[in-house]
Structure formats: structure tokens, C-alpha cells
Image: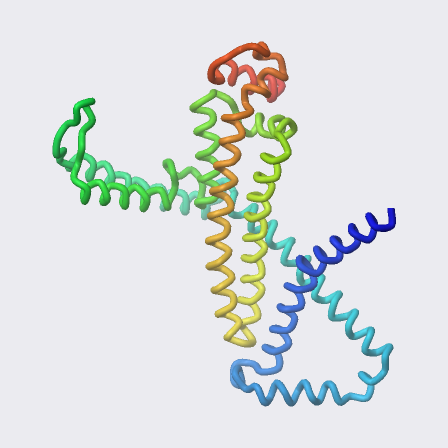
Length: 308
């Protein structure tokens, strides 16, 4: 038991350091540097060194108790800053995935829809003007390589806005909505009602991959929260704005990658394990074969919604 407790304690300590103390301590250090230098002396290393020397020369710091209290205070402040970033990260995560019910969100959704339809029209125009170079033996039509590359580029530009006509104010919300729409179109099942039940029967490897993608998205939201913190700090020390921009850029890239992986894994889980769930709830016989039919998907939605 003692080795087990020691191992668990080591893992908890490592997680506490990585998630709370280190990011918070870095932010606290930048805050101290910014408050010391300010805009006018933003690069004055000698000024910073002198301030640290004056602080270290204070007699109170020679006392062990005072030094211990200072260290504890720094750790607690760093942990508090990290907890605040986690809270703000959760709010940012919800903001990214929100529905467009307020006027600003509806305006943003309409703007994204106009952009999407404009690019979709360019894709359709490029396809319509693609001249075939010949017809294969099996009836396939070939088009020039350059034309096909242009169509692919236009399609990728459209998909960077959304995979389908935007219905939410952000790419993140539209990506998850596209997953729900694709599942409903393929199987006739409501993904929101299906997913909590499907999650319970997923094998451990699949669950770990989905949780890993989910954690990556949450980590990106926390990084965006740190970016907000550094942007506020830039009011006193402008180089912090560079850190804020870097945090925002990396957070955006990681959030897109994480959510893309999460949406793909959720859809794959429905494809692979949807029939198993239908069998477990009694809508399919254990020896049934074939794909999950629409009537079965409708039945699953009706059962899971409980006649809401």
C-alpha cells in the first residue's frame, strides 16, 4: 500500500506543478517584471537587476520563517492565477461552442454564412467551368490537373469557414453541429441524446482517444485564457502583448486541431458502436446484420429522449 500511495502522491504533485504552479509562476514573474519596468523602461535589465538586489538585501528575508512565508505566498498566488485561468478557459470553451441567440452572435453567424455562400458559389462555378479532358473506360470523367487543384483550393477555403452552411457564430460550434447533422442524416439518430449512452459502452482505448482530444481542446481554451491575462498585463508593460498574441495564435491552432479530432472520433464511435448500443437497448436482435437503419435510429432517439 505504501508504494502505491507514494506513486499516487508523486503523480498528484507532478500534475499540481504542471497545471497550477508552473503556468501561474510564469505569469506572476512576468507581472513582477512588467510592474517593475513599465512602458518607459521596458528593456532596462539593469533596473530590474537593481530592484531584485534591493529586495534580496532586506534583513527580513534572512529569517527562515519569513522566507518560507514568501515562498508559500508565491506558490499560493501562482495557484490562484492558474485556477482563475482554468475558470476563464471554461468560459472561453463555452463561448466558442455557443449558439447564436444574442444579436451579436446572430450578426456574426449571418456574416459567416454570407462568406460561406460566396466561397461555395466559387466552388460551384469552378466545377461548372471545368472542362473534361476525356472519359475513361469505366465512365469516369477526367479534368485537367490545374483545374482540379483550383477546385480543391476553393473547397478548402470554404471549409475553413464551415463544412456546411454556418448556423453558429464560430467555426468550433459549426464543426460540432456538422457532426450531429451528419450522424442524423446517416442514421436518423439525435447525437445529443445518443452520446451519453454510447459513451458508457465504448471500449477503453476509444474512450481514451476521445478524452485526449477533449482535453486538448480544453487545454487550448486555457491557453487562450492565459493570452487574455497577458493582454491585460500589456497595459503596464507592452512586451506582454507579444506573449498574448503568441498564446492566442497557438490556442487557435490547437483548438481547431483538437476539436477536429474530437468531432471525427465522435462520428467514428457512432459508426462503429451505434449498432451495439441499439442491440443493448433492445431495438435490434443480437444476430442482426447490416448498417444501422433510419427507423432504428429514430427509435433510439425516441427512447433516449423519453418522450420529451
